[in-house]
Amino acid sequence: MFLEVSQLGVQYANSTQAAVDGVSFSLQAGEIGVFIGPSGCGKTTLLRAVAGLEQIQAGSIRLARQVVSSPQQHLPAEARQIGMVFQDYALFPHLNVAGNVAFGLTHLNATARAQRVSEVLELVGMASAHKRFAHELSGGQQQRVALARALAPRPRLLLLDEPFSNLDVDLRERLAHEVRAILKAAGATALFVTHDQLEAFAIGDRIGVMHHGRLHQWDDAYALYHRPATRFVANFIGHGVFVPATLVHRRDGVVACTPLGELTGDDECPLPSSYAGGECDLLLRADDIVHDDNAPVKARIERKAFRGSEFLYTMQLASGETLLVHVPSHHDHAVGEWVGIRAQVDHVVTFARQA
Image 1 (cartoon, rainbow, N blue to C red):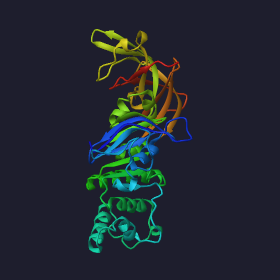
Image 2: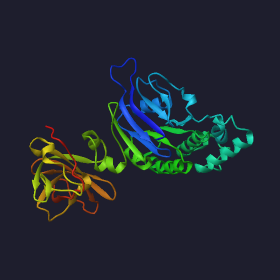
Image 3: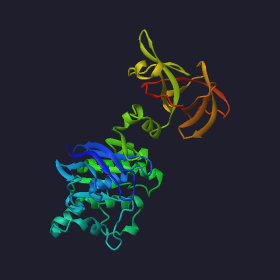
Image 4: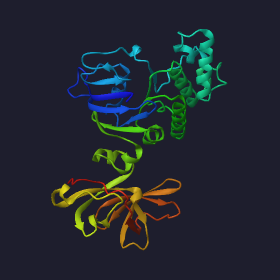
């Protein structure tokens, strides 16, 4: 592994609670890792610790098998060969684009420096912008220049701290896809922090969900959505609700008895013995529910949100449970209308019953 973080602990002097608590993860060379979570969850502190900007109180950080942080030793940030891209871009207004990108290349002679500047500007799609200044560029263009500047010295690891937070929503996801392509073309290993799920899904090979300083799951986007490891991850990622279920044995295996009928998935259901009396809460994503006028189960539309190609309906069953349902937008039903629904579940995901 290229980056290995083991049982990391960071606690500020004036705090009684650890900002980062027992976090472990790893990245292979060329992989892009993303940390996501609510404000104050510790993701930026974690990034700063990897950068060498925060001392750690527990665990270790290894970069290319070298211990760069532990309670006993601390390699200074400037010696780690790590590049950083910030949310405010931090471009120098008195330097043009070429000058900004060349800022960290003072170890090269003028010819080599000019060649490297041209290489990375070509890589980020800004090949003709050498002489322009930051105030002449759009937000997306400034972000590309900031990325080019960070990549220019060929860092061992690139860290990006909410780099798209100042951009509008439509531009964020598109730029995330473009930045991923740039990082892959450069062969860069990168660690990225965001609060935006679409950004995380667009850019990350591995995604970590953090809450109260702890890492709940480090996995790919598909697993986070369909196989969340904790109830927090299930709640935080995507649209979904929990309904009461009872796991029981049938002749063909285990099924989950729910208000929408008996459910089985492609994966095996958890065993009834996993919970007292087999009673648990089952996660239903909005795309696990199918609108079907002929279904025996009906639900009342409580709210509707138009998303262009689809509606996100909030529905309530006669038994009181609330569901979220994605329905194609040509099925335009009124609030208060009762419509038929059925569950079509690929993954039976259950958690301990909550009151």
